[in-house]
Image 1 (cartoon, rainbow, N blue to C red):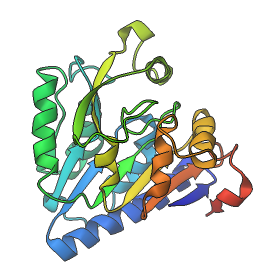
Image 2 (spheres, rainbow, N blue to C red; image 1 turned 90 degrees about the vertical axis):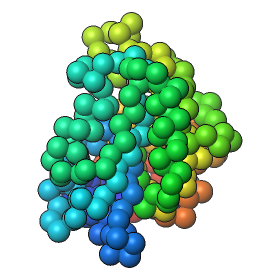
Image 3 (cartoon, rainbow, N blue to C red; image 1 turned 180 degrees about the vertical axis):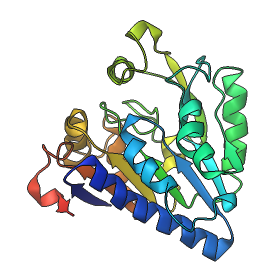
Length: 250
């Protein structure tokens, strides 16, 4: 695992997009296709804008998987991750093969379908965020590091739900769904390459806990430290509480 720190979100997004687009092109060159997992949230905006503007990516050869989605939330809702995935990635690139997690209707069946699809081959590159409580996808602490299921139904903790209110997707916590479909930790860790895009001051404590403390389900993103090809992209604000020796400034 490598930690890279940038001055601001714009520089972070540009550098992460360069690495991401190189990984996609390499997979297409070597195997004829790229299988990609993408997160959708406010923290990913600059990165995804840069990535979807990248030149010479054969998007028709990309198969896209969804990281997580609320249970019971209509796709029309501003907080719907399906809505964001379509708007931020699919509609901008013309990707033809994509797997949306429909948490509104029969979420257990949606999780089964997504699990079957993702198990059909390796994931070349995966884009993640890290939550204010240290979660990856919707694996809140204490995260299940052991389950073999690629996708599962999880219960969201209060810190996670309050984060969604803070990001202005919901007016108050009563509107935030209590359950979600989430890619499991083990499935996340199977990707050949992982890029975690984590800007902003509100993520600084989670970053410190996950990358200075022990590797523990209580700090779910700490598991990324065991991945051989993971890069954590921070800006100066999200890296503010990290020991200087852990930061590789770019």
